[in-house]
Image (cartoon, rainbow, N blue to C red; front, top):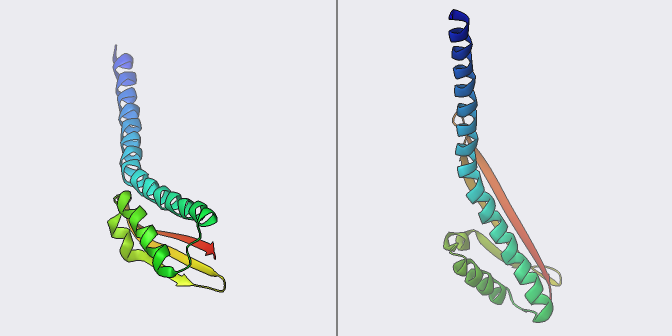
Length: 122
């Protein structure tokens, strides 16, 4: 009977460790998934801009910036507008969104750096 009790106790410890690891994975996922969705939304906005530029080209930085700001507002990403920089290059208009997010790992807070670049030919 003592052997049966000892085996059961070891199984409980293993189950507890597995549940702790699963909980840690869920905790990291709860933080990371929204960051990934946000990054994909910015990529989608830039893809929309590329498609629209091939159909109806925008000629000025102001027009490009206002269209990106409008798309960010539609996606409820208003805080991204302060991270948006639009400039003119040689025959192109360049847009760049650069921002940081934190990922709390429990033992360390990791800074996640995101940068998305859009180059539109005139």
